[in-house]
Length: 442
Image (cartoon, rainbow, N blue to C red; front, top):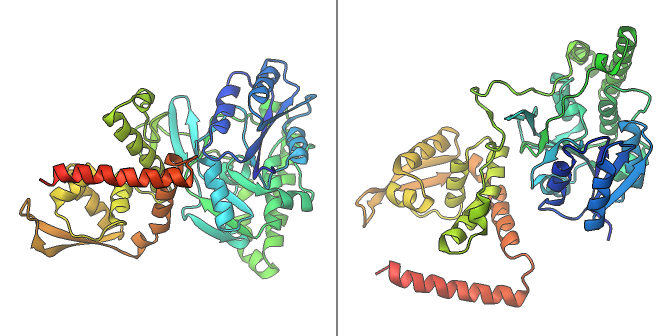
């Protein structure tokens, strides 16, 4: 069967981090992909590591070739790729478990030619969320180019690894990496691709861990004169790109902004000091999972597994919409009921403290996601005034994403179930619920 995605990893002497990279790909929630590991003449054990993965997993294909550089290595993989889409990784980086799923979902649901995502920048034990386009959604070529003009040298636009490409566009227009240059070759590929793409999607969820410190041109042995010539060449291409995107009149209006590229330094959004907002220790950027608790048996372990699975998908919604996990959890509950409840009952149901619930309600109200009013009746149990909570238009806009959370949650739990097994499960679950209700409602 033809894979939906071809994931391409160029490899050169990467034995130290290669397992982490490959494992993150093979452990994706989405699995309709082929993995092309292209060994670019490594002199360490990278080639043997790749062969071992290929022997253990039929999704892995290994290409061994003489050392010709990363651009030629990527071109080799593109020519042999079979997927509808192309996804790229560097061998010393890794991706989140939902990375490919989120990229493919955005591309297929919105019929996109290019999906671009936020990423994590990692320095040692520190990590921070990096991105550029603030609004999660569909963009035209002109809108995308307008955003790129604001931060022209940002890694967000220049690199391959935070994007998903349509392979048919790459083949139709014979796009490839320029092997004659050693700086910005991926950015030039992106500019060429963008000229042939029409629909773009900006995904705010960070899905990629970028840790490699790229060498400067000077560190590659480039002379000053050759460095300047190369930068002028890249700028000329960049300038011509905008002349193609805009008509002459609009280009003249934006020409000064286009020229910012030449004075901006290429940036990957380095991690700032840990005490600043948005920076955390590596491993704390998403909710943690206790692997021992996940594998245990018993009532508490089962409840823990279900909660953590739900949090995994709720957290993606939180990241995409600049919300906290508590805020999204409460919105998820509110999306499924409009019954008035007291603060005590609502806090008890959502597992929050009463003060924590009040704070979360205040934050959601301040973001114009909900409207909270006091109902006329009181709770029979606590005597508190009941709250009527209404989802406002911005909150209603999140309903499709919250519905997807439930679908993803159920898809994992019921993976491999037959229709008869699902019917049996539902019947027994309802019986269990009735038995518990009999005791708790006494």
